Amino acid sequence: MTAAVMANGNWDPALSRLLVSLEEARQVLPSSEEEFGFLSDLLQSKELHALVKVHNKIINNGKDEKFHPTLSNSMQIALEVLEVVAPRTCISEDCKEVFMLLQKPHIQGLLCAHDAVAQKDYFPRLPEIPLEVDEDEETIKIVQLVKSNEPLGATIKTDEETGKIVIARIMHGGAADRSGLIHVGDEVCEVNGISVEGKTPNDVLKILQSSEGTITFKLVPADGKSGLRESKVRVRAHFDYASATDPYIPCKEAGLDFVKGDILHIVSQDDAYWWQARREGDRNMRAGLIPSRALQERRIIHERAQIDKAAGEEKTSEDETWNLGLHLLPTNFPVGLCSVSVLPGCQSPKSPRCASKPKTKKIMYELAENDDFDREEIATYEEVAKLYPRPGLHRPVVLIGPPGVGRNELKRRLIATDPEKYKTPIPYTSRSVRHGEVHGKEYFFVTREKMEEEIESGKFIEFGEYKGNLYGTSAESVKSLVNAGYVCILNPHYQALKMLRTPQLKPYVIYIKPPPFDVLKETRNAAYARSTFDENNSRGFTDEEFRDMLHSAERIEFLYSHLFDCTIVNADLSAAFEHLVQAVTRVETEPLWVPASWVQ
Ligand SMILES: Nc1ncnc2c1ncn2[C@@H]1O[C@H](COP(=O)(O)OP(=O)(O)OP(=O)(O)O)[C@@H](O)[C@H]1O
Image (cartoon, rainbow, N blue to C red; front, side, top):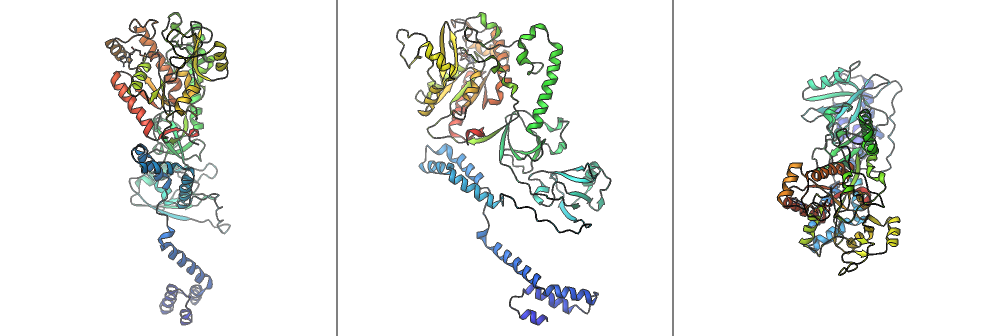
């Protein structure tokens, strides 16, 4: 029979050899005639024959290099290339061409499709092939992992319904995930031969900790398990997070710490309360747990309610006026900050005390009163994407800061370095032209009616009234500078930020922060700085004005810090200016993170 089988050219030689050895060993095998017959039939069955043929075909095809993608992250590499060539587009035509080419949507689409195929990230997913299991028989899988310094990257819990130990979470990129053998919901039966029945997750952890070398799990696979698919979402964190001090995190060791401003790659949002993330650029492949947006929002609302309660207990009748905003502030937040001036009138937003003091600043700011308290919006995570510098189309640079901190000084110095490149929009006014003034040079002179109409229709990013005349900056004048290829430098009132931060303008926001009181006083006095709180600019700042500046700064930071792209402390003026030049160069040459909606 064997010879007949072997004579068949289609017969697999490995199967033939097995059959021959089986027959040769027949006499010495302790097996029964029945068992021998079964094995012999199996080795000659058409089904096994076909199966081995298919197997060999697949193996042979797999050997052919052209079926293997050389990489599965071509999109990532394209982005890295863009980062490298972006600053060189002005020195080399080739760089420019590659830069433009790699940004084309169809090239990016092609690369994305390539990566999806290479990563076998197909969509829609095929349903799992149902396992044919005998009703009473459970499939058990044995998984062996070698213990190293690296954590396993999985958490366990007691299933509430069955009381059994199950895999609660698999951390993306961790050892368990990479093995592809352990899935969420798998039931743990044994660890290193020790039954975990009736044990708590802590008991199981102890077994794991005391094990050396290879760890063997006996698991009952979960039904309908699915492979983990990585999301591509990047977010900017608007709060600091330290897992060690978080009483709610299910597993402190699995936590990922971050600070406000960090860019996080969210790899899984499967759990409503605990997302999995990596810090962008972090080489560590294993993801960590971070609170989800929903959880963090709840936490902030709870914290604010606590603060509210505490503030309510301390509240005096004087506090009443500021109640609208202060219920959002930390308990130690300075009380009595400035209100917002309302047309008509000439209160300045600088401080509540400033209503009695004249100002040199011509343009004051006006917005609906409640607008200043937009921290009602809870800043947790903001989805971001990289924006590449676009040759000839510069992002406007917006300097935000408390009155008197030095924004005008820094803006003036920057424009002076290259007046043909850096421009600031020309303001509008309803006052009449003075001798020597030219329309479109110092101001655009328009009638009060026209200006009021345009303010009404939302065309001004900031406006105010001074000595019976209106002053303001129109959004259109910012746009026209940008479209003409200039780098538009703005130093509007901080409340203008919300109007400026649009997908059309894509501003880069720099916060000019005052240094601590002593340094502020020392640097300004040493430079004979002129107080911007004084109408004639004829004296230095008073201590009270320095304190106002610091109070305003705290308020701006509390309300708007989540909108800052960069912070510059204006202590030593030349150091602050150097920092500004570096930041502006970065905006012109480097891809930077912006709200995802700006790049769609
Ligand atoms: N780092 C610094 N050290 C010393 N003096 C400074 C510094 N920065 C700014 N000044 C001075 O402080 C004064 C106020 O600065 P500037 O007019 O730029 O303030 P501003 O932020 O534009 O204020 P406002 O918004 O009220 O117009 C000016 O005399 C300026 O030269």
